Amino acid sequence: MRKQLSEFANKPIYNMKAVEQQTGISAATLRAWERRYALVEPQRTPSGYRLYSDRNIALLRWVRDRMAEGLTVSRVVAMIETLRVSNEPLLVEENSRSSPPPIANDAPLPPAKLVHPLLMALIDLDDERANEVIEQAFAMYTMSTVYVEVIAPTLVEIGEAWHRGEVFISTEHFATTYLRGRLLGLLQAYPHRADMPTLFVGCAPNERHEFGALIFAVMLRQQGYNVVYLGQDVPIDDIIEAALHEHPTMLCLSASNPTTALALRDVQMRLSAANPPPYFGYGGRAFDQDADLRAQVPGQYLGADPRDGLHTVANLLRMFRPD
View 1 (tube, rainbow, N blue to C red):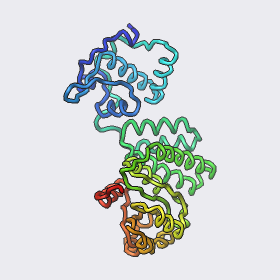
View 2: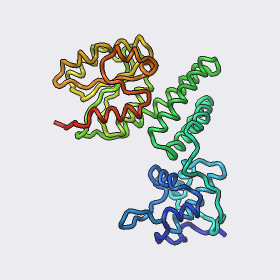
View 3: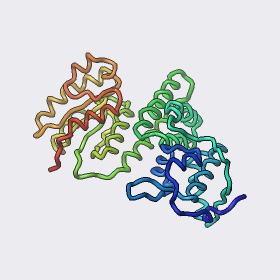
């Protein structure tokens, strides 16, 4: 029997464990949906614990059943919004399955399993499907995990497919433009904070592979830093002049091959002319693969994983105080 969602009681009485048992949706997934989609808005006890109503549970069961039919969570949320705007009732089964199959658990699908679906969507030039895969990833994992373990490997795969002659150059351009646009959109989504340091992030001279730097810039921005993203092929003379004039707290540059990496040998020395001199950090595939190269470039190596780079930056700047 079906009834309107508004007919279910809205008194908050169920804790998170009870919701897991009645819906098959894990606590981790539910929290992600609340954060990203505001799918349900539980009440809180005085000690901060979430409490859910029969109406919340009915809605979550309806979402679960639509996803069991093959829809993504973002598509289901869009359906709910369409019904709300049109003032049409959302009809829910009053007595859903007593033992629902879980749609997620505390050991979710590994992030790497989403690389192939995203790759296929991009090869098919299907940005709508690519959006769905990325939104699914954001619902399941931290944003840093999505950047490092889903988006970055997909970029590698699409590049290798082009080199093997398996995709057209136009396909490769579509994929990189799409992913670059997603990252730039995220970069601009965070406000300036006067109480946080300013960091310049970009690529070494003649360096065209920018995704590592761009991903790092987005992750820094999400940590609250004021990031000035400089993009590809940054001339050293220009960036030194900019640093001396704008006084960033740190400069981070990326290089993917030995030639562009060695162009960074004099950066730290030239930055010493500033008062105070900004920190200098560097990263990229060239440095990840060659310890001897790292020894030739003074400064702070940021590590092969940008998540490690975040910790390095935080440790360097932990004594920062705004003027």
